[in-house]
Image 1 (tube, rainbow, N blue to C red):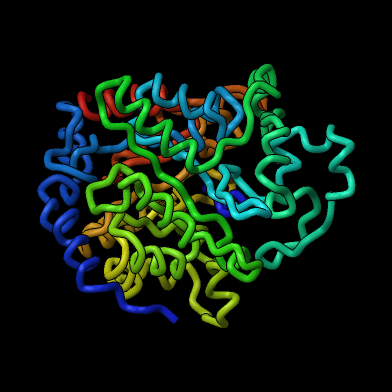
Image 2: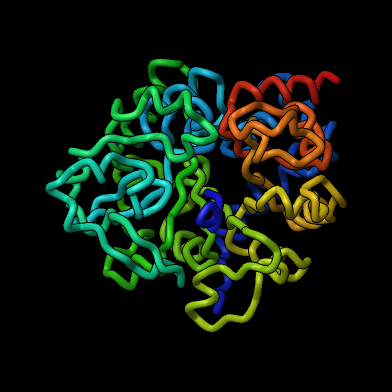
Length: 391
């Protein structure tokens, strides 16, 4: 998630349009109500019904696991998110290996999230590539076999903000998506409660041009484990609308289009010469189009409430109401506890690793009527939801 931290359309099938209506439109009594009323459903821990409607609202999504406490996209992070009570775990951001396996990394460049730089046998693999138009130097998953990647260990991505997480550097390897699907089943059995995951296809246009198409690989694994149905506990997401359209033709899972800043363009649009920006996608027309092949959107929080030049909150937009009007849910990203990631008025001091008033920020965003939120701090999100629902 988060575009680098964010980041030609075909009409959705009739089946997918019906799915959207069944899961969300007809479920408007749960997902389409004003914020406080919809959130009241979380008192019982269920939104009612099956599939997406079984989730509490607002839904607390463990962003890359519990990445506020453990190195992201590791089983340590995923496990902790569940232990803290996450409704869904974002496991994981999917990128391919040289031999076609899907692994969970925030980006294909792994210099900042693994100890690859400490492996002299891979020193020659360091290179510079153009990734979605951006020159990027480092080590890339597509240049390694799965066996080679399994010799690496994960490290904290942002140690300046999370120095305590560095304690766990080197403890966990890179998980594969297939391992995540097995882990999901194992945890569901152990906990006696359905575990949900929220994987993302990363840079699908880039990888398709390398002959490593993501969507078909994702669909194949979901079918193998019987998780490709409309009520399967796997929500798929991507910053590229055409990736979601492709998945729409391959599986029946709930689908979510991720949206970066208003002025940005999805890379598949850039590649295809489509001049539209995210601002075009969040118009009533753009939202109706997305509702033809997706069940939700994952906008950056700044599309929900804009910010002033000094970083403080400004105006609440109409995006929540506009999206709900066409039956789309909203799962914006990303809530974090540390000062640099909070709106200015919720920061406390200037330390980059110090917590600000995250509860105040959660309250402000929940009040807009969002259906859930990605957060690095599951426990904070759950307490904030309880405050909001019971307040």
